[in-house]
Image (cartoon, rainbow, N blue to C red; front, top):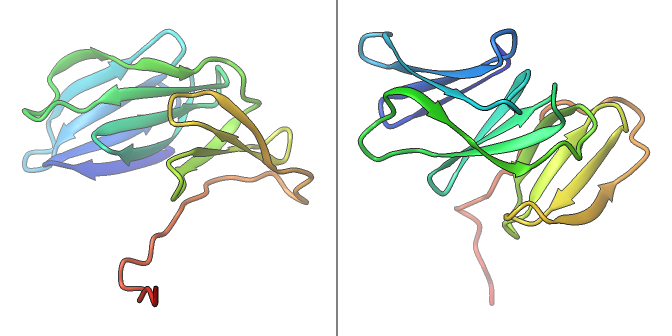
Length: 147
């Protein structure tokens, strides 16, 4: 297990060894769904953003997206490709305040930036001294704006 998300009474688990995201009902712990795709190899990180579960797949260098149904996921489900194979061992990612995707590439030791639709916008940070893992954007909703 490399990543988990709790949303609407379900636990989403990135099963790296199984090449799938498993979905469990929180109340019972029962497995209710699998999210899969041929490019979903070695899922390592999950982020929920605006009703979509974003899935980083280190094994294929891809980022996938799954629209979470309001009624709850059931059965065998398929994610969509957002970024296909253009990443070098993506280990984590975050959605920034600009709506862009910031992706940590372990092997290239950098953070790449993409538009919400997957278009490449360039390198955000290059030449990191270590292999980046998980990153996140934290928004301070209590911050006072003096404008």
